[in-house]
Length: 342
Image 1 (cartoon, rainbow, N blue to C red):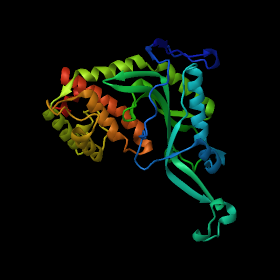
Image 2: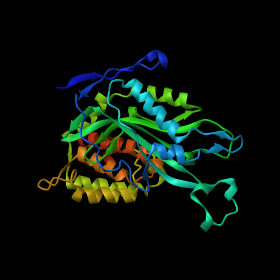
Image 3: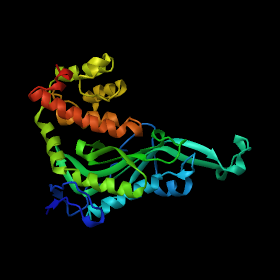
Image 4: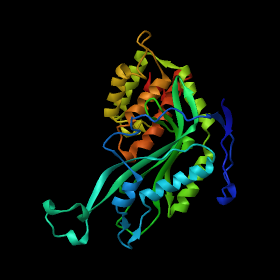
């Protein structure tokens, strides 16, 4: 038996915020939802790691001019996870899945002069330049076209976007709340569920930023927008137009490109979308009508995005939602996205 859950902040007096809050109703399961898929939420050149590995085997970079420590990957993950546990108290909140890339290697002082082939594991230091994590709240879920979606929260840290050669300053993070399609582990990120430039000095700033994002996010509206994609289909000709225009978009003169909606997908990802149109087991075209729903097109976009590097992943996830929503409206009523399908 499922009951309605009102997504509201808990113990608001701890973090005073002036943002107006909303109420949204969505399904609450009384049992654990489907088991985790073995598919990763991002692929590219990433690998899965554990919190224990980050804590015990990785150093924490500093700002070189004043030797002030940065906010560690583990502190980032733990802060967002604890904020979610407070805000969504009473829900089942899973442990974070963590993926990293771009390892930065170093040595301890005692091993400075050792040849590489004589280095011991205890002589080496490492940290990861880029890290992304997410965790599910499976008791808050919805189903679209037979695809179970779990509410999911996560974030990205990329040290390559910091100036570690300077004195300590505001540090940049990206956080999101949205839904993960459990069929394919594709991330569904909407505008009000994404903060792409959260700049803070400490973990308290991260805590406040996370709670503010949770307050402003409207899961019911997000679900309705995704469900509306089921009501529109693209013909094979329209889909071919979309692919062709997407390739042309990369080569447009800058003044023409500025007049069009943004498209962040690369040519390689456009090629993956074309291949998936025919071959993806879950989201390929209808073999009889040769048409494809905009919900499936959206999932082809988010599927191709899994090949992005960590520092670009969330921006492209968000852009995929904007693109699907814009083209959906263009097919129905016409708008600035019409250029992609005409």
